[in-house]
Image (cartoon, rainbow, N blue to C red; front, side, top):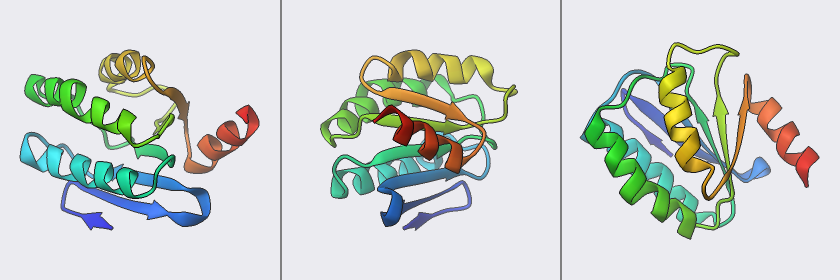
Length: 128
């Protein structure tokens, strides 16, 4: 498990999920350290689902978006992960940010957007 004042990441074995929860706005190392922790868990648990609770989400700075697209997403693909779940309300204050990430993520992963962890798992099981 990884936890900072900005995020918490844990592996939930029963669901084969790496669960990343944003607590508050983070940038640069405060953003990247939790994301790298998630990546390490995804490497350790090949083929797991990556679920991000973005209800406390925020607009990323340009440098973090570039890092995410050029480093994190290519490394994530190497883990065998194929599903990325976003936990968000039906309408979010960061729709533009989510759309930006979703467009890039969907190039290599199936994206499930839902209002709860359980809803993402139900959607994933239904698609099998």
